Each structure stands twice: as structure tokens, then as C-alpha cells.
Length: 245
Image (cartoon, rainbow, N blue to C red; front, side, top):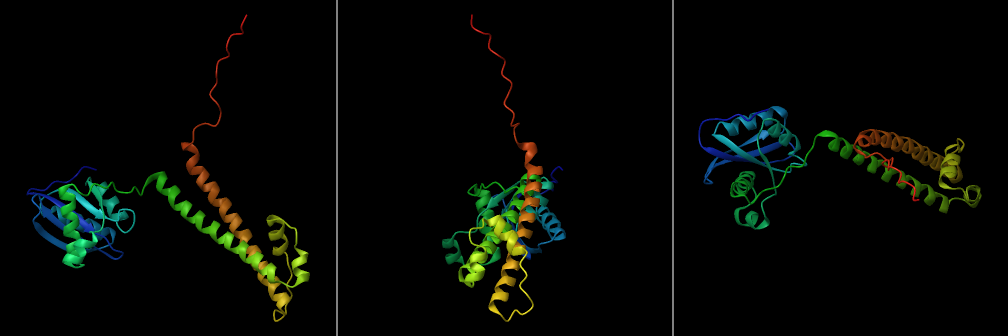
């Protein structure tokens, strides 16, 4: 999509991003503050923000704070509209101490950094296969951590369990232990610590099994996404050297 242009002075925009609303500001080519305004952090709000900026002149670039977090979707909208986006940091602590914390101050400070060339960050990409892999890996790390926690809880319960229960599972490797614990029959009277421990161990083991399945599913999904980018595992064919005579 090509960039829209408007008659008027060249301007630079910047956006101080937050969870529910973004505060935008525009300055002219010599750094004069033209206007600032708050917009809701919604698709409609992003489009209104862009049109509002362009109403002040020819938009040269927009600095966005947090292109990898609260500003991710706004960055996508601006980039799709042909706008040059620059990743900007929060104003430094000295500026905040001198001028106080406020969204307009933060926005104008960042706009000045973009105009002067001090802010040159490249926005974090949040599209394509790379983004798909990133979000699936977040889910995988989470479930792996939870599975490890469940296994640690199993071992902790076994350490303090009655001897007859502890000895029943001694020497089993993790796979056999989880499989065996998942088949336990704790009984109906959970007021007895032995029965309650069996019930807890069975629940943790079944949770562990469910997370094994989830991890396998995520591995398959990640494999399908990353396989096309991998070089062939087969070695390149090398012609045979002629035998020496």
C-alpha cells in the first residue's frame, strides 16, 4: 500500500503506547509542538490516529514506543499504510525528573528524538512465520515449566509419603512412575492421609500425561512451521574421484 500525502509542512509523529489508550503527538520539521491527542487502543482508534496526524501535514515518520508490546498492532497498521515507523525508548529518567511524568511530555520528547535522529530503532516484526513460531514457543515454554513443576511435586509427595507407598514406586524411571501413578486407586475415604496422598499423586501424574500430549502437539506444529526453512539434511552429492593408476 502506498503512503498518503497531505499538503502542508513536513511533520513527525510519535505515540506513547499503553494498554487501553495511546497518546499521540506531532511536531514540525524544526521541532515545534503542533498538537497532541489520546486515542483508544483499537483498530478504529489506530486509523483515526493516523488520519489525525496526516491532517497536520506531510507525515515523514512516526516513532512508536513499545513496538513489540502495546504498540505492536499500531505498528502493523502504520506499516501497512506505508508509514515509516521507528521504535523509540521511554524518555530517560533525567527528563522525567526535570519535567514530570505525563503522556504529552513523553510523546513530545520521543518525537524530538525521532526528528533529531537520536531514535533509530527498527520496529520488532510481529507478522509472518517468525511471529507464529514465537507465540507457539511461548506456549511450549509455559507447558514445559508446568510439567516440570508437576514432576517436582510428585517427587516431593513421595519423599514424605508413608513408607509402604514410597517403596512401592522406588526405582521406577520417570515414564514408568507417571504411568503407574496415573493408574492408582486411592479409595473413597480421603480423610486417611495414605488415600489422600494416592489421590494427589494420581492427579499430578494425569496432569503430567496431559502436558506430555500438549508438548507433542506443539512440537508437531512448530516442526511444520520451521521445516520448510531448514536446509536439506541429506549431504550434497559429491562426484567420485577417478581411481589412481
